[in-house]
Length: 215
Ligand SMILES: *[C@@H]1O[C@H](CO)[C@@H](O)[C@H](O)[C@H]1NC(C)=O
Image (cartoon, rainbow, N blue to C red; front, side):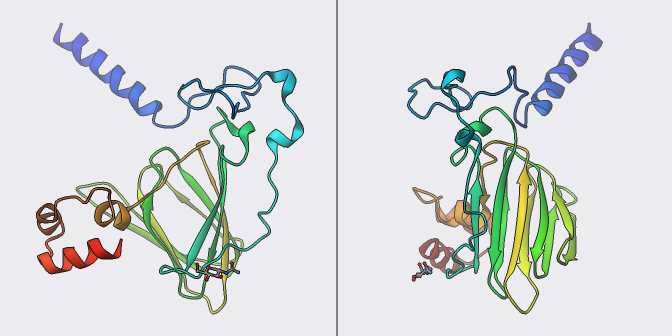
């Protein structure tokens, strides 16, 4: 009895683990119907007879993103919001531009692993494993180098070259989502009570108040 409870517990755990990324398609495609009011996991399908080549297309990824901001980087996303044909396919793309010394700040994608290719310049990249190890994996990449960020783990990039840097990354979700750590912790709406952040980050209350005013 106890062993069967353990077995089913393990089975339930395995399923929840597998379903952490997008589920498989049950048809050739399910192009998102932007006019549908139906709320489903993902987006409702448009009538396949109405589907056109443009539903699978996006233009403009040759254009550099504007990096004039506090972190010196810009992500241009190409996910199901830009290409309705990505609905149910479990894949998407992003172009990231980096000013000299710009960073893509520590963040995580709750629904997708990421595979990044450096197209121009040099990047220092890294990710941190889950607790208790919190082990940092880091590497300097040059043009043509590829690096993987496993699903859910906090990761970052920094431009360590002299000029601009550009990367193209693919993600294993039609809508991988992004949680930027500093913004989520210090820029939530409404604010997380500052005494929680004081203890969590072992910071002075004035520092927490300052950070909350910045994000
Ligand atoms: C880039 O963004 C900055 C800050 O928002 C803005 O002032 C500037 O006009 C933008 N540049 C271009 C080329 O859009």
